Amino acid sequence: MNADSRLSSGLADGEFVELAVEVFAMLADATRVRVILALREAEELSVNELADVVEKSPASVSQHLAKLRLARIVSTRQDGTRVFYRLENEHASQLVRDAIFQAEHSLGGVPRHHRGDEAKQESGVTA
Image 1 (tube, rainbow, N blue to C red):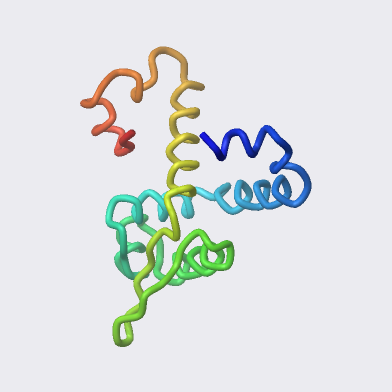
Image 2: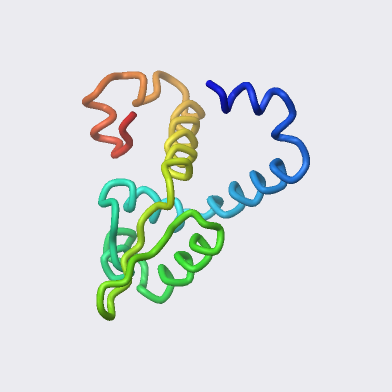
């Protein structure tokens, strides 16, 4: 609630709007959205594990992860020679979730997220 009042009082002006646009641009890629959804479900995965989940090559996923890391959307933990990725916070995950919900609305009819728990589980997106 405090965040909402801060936004309406001018916090969203200037640099914050520009940074928000950069976040949206970072999320405007299907592979990155799939990576965020995978990390939301698993909490922490290696590049190879993420590559399997999103069905892309490890090299491609690694490049996307580097961009997400620079944007501070994901962070890493090293265990020996393996690097594990996780979401930095819940906000990117929430943006992706809301974007998917908005996409469901654009299809017409009653969106899956308005139909109940069974439809949410089928879509892979939970409230």
